[in-house]
Length: 100
Image 1 (cartoon, rainbow, N blue to C red):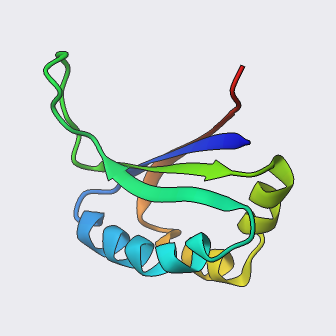
Image 2 (cartoon, one colour):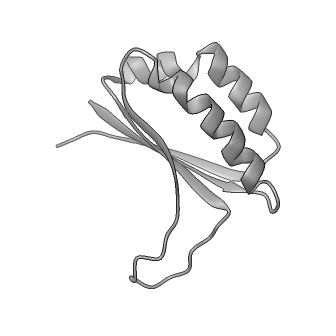
């Protein structure tokens, strides 16, 4: 089992449209073989200091294997998603972790 943390900083004014597109794609991903968990999150104030950036959104995912993740990233609905959001991000970061 692996976990994925896929963080994106969005361009100003793109948040609502990005979330709309992402949420429309979530059922497609959840239906994929090997997908255990897949959700879109935003930063929140948990009282630990620092600032909350409303333009940062993060997918938190769990997959049965790295192979399932690779297959996911090449799915037709993911190709469409990538094209739809291509000009909406300032930056993105992908972390893949596993239990120890």
